[in-house]
Image 1 (cartoon, helix red, strand yellow):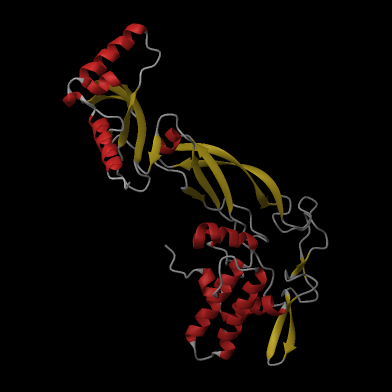
Image 2 (cartoon, rainbow, N blue to C red; image 1 turned 180 degrees about the vertical axis):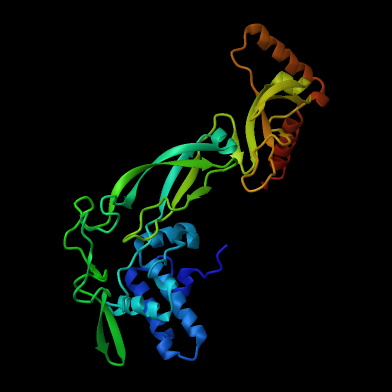
Amino acid sequence: MSSKRDYYDVLGVSKNVPEAELKKAYRRLAMKYHPDRNSDDADAENKFKEAKEAYDVLSDAQKRAAYDQFGHAGVEGSFAGGHANAGGVGDIFDSVFGDIFGGGRGGGERVYRGADLRYDLDLSLEEAINGATTKIRVGKLTTCTICSGSGAKKGSTPADCPTCNGMGQVRMQQGFFSIQQTCPQCRGQGKIISDPCGSCHGKGRVRDNKTISVKIPPGVDTGDRVRLTGEGEAGEKGGPSGDLYVHVIVRDHPIFTREGTNLHCNVPISFTMAALGGEIEVPTLNGRVTLKIPSETQTGKLFRLRGKGVRSVRSSSIGDLLCKVAVETPVKLDKRQKELLEELEQSMANNAKHHSPKSKSWLDGVKDFFENLTP
């Protein structure tokens, strides 16, 4: 589990904060904790870095969505190759005041991690319980194979920007601050592509469909996810690829209902079996088993079959199968069958101890209710 603080708490904002308020909160913290103003305070420097990291994620729509969905795990690696966590305070200063004043100090062409992707995978209950290997097809941005991600036409290379000399930033003086701003010609990339690749049109990435094999471990359930590292979208300018998160959705089963590692099923029995007892075959994941029904069983009675449930994906424990019986009322009776039932009813009515226990207690309760009503 990550030890990092929640990014919204770091900036002191709510999860539905609009972009303008988010930037205002970040600007306030950046100015307060900047090392130039707190040269003897190491804690201020750490808070400065923490605020920058939080803003980098929450100010980016894709990263923010991934963070809201997966927490810190959804944006792991987002600061590689030129972002705040890759260097010291000087590197942070580049993008902090670049965001606030429109520029930064730069340091050559930057690379960016590709976006994480989500894929919803439908599985049958049997596949989820036993595990499965399946192939999925995902549309995503991949590195252009023609230019190898450079964005330049094959045989040519991007040239250093003449305005910033490949730094991506130009310097400006504002009061006691020496401010670095994004180069207006190369837009902070540090490189100029004079002859762009015809396949990706200078972007370095193209959209493609890729078939990926996914191994689903046994015991997964709806809401579980499998992370495929590096199978997200390709990064910009040679940056690392994002990850693909496969979210499991287990389809409804005609017999079983799952609850954690336990399975539930309804078992209908005749009223004769309920009264006299007997045996009935019930299904399990490993075949049929015989369930003994004791005499005088009431509808709703729950029978537990130990170890006939699901093995947990996170441990070796196995759940149980819970069978709930429902006594069925016979239908489409012929004349003789009806006569027999009437005789049975009359026989029980003549002997109070044979009355249905629940019916008697309910009738007694109704009688007490009416007797206690205030006139």
